[in-house]
Length: 141
Image 1 (tube, one colour):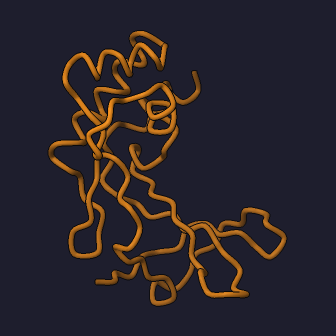
Image 2 (image 1 turned 90 degrees about the vertical axis):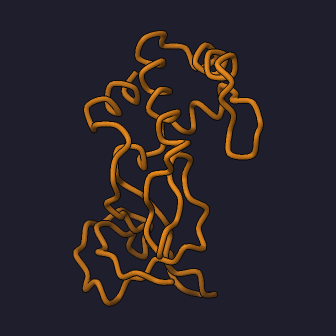
Image 3 (image 1 turned 180 degrees about the vertical axis):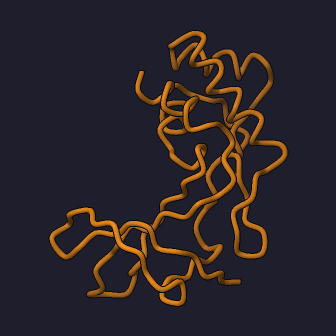
């Protein structure tokens, strides 16, 4: 299923970021993208995953307490948590998930996958797992 979403930001032909409001009819997002950890696709929209989203929130809380990504990965693994594929969390996985803006409610995807078409970044507002303040505290180190 496809759902129409509002375009917030895109890149112009020089690769520079440009803020633009577009007609929602011109931008469609499908469930073909892999959902970020903590979310899943439901009827063409990203919604929080009941199993993964508490783990993702805990990741931020642990990072703010310990300030070490390896420590966060070890604590999550020791508590029995695993990634979506069943693998152990690594410091690189924790780093990637801490930096991913989907946790604060902004999902980014690329549009324009046809040959010769200019790709643009589309930001979609989704339900946040953590507050913007918590995300900023973790991301700004």
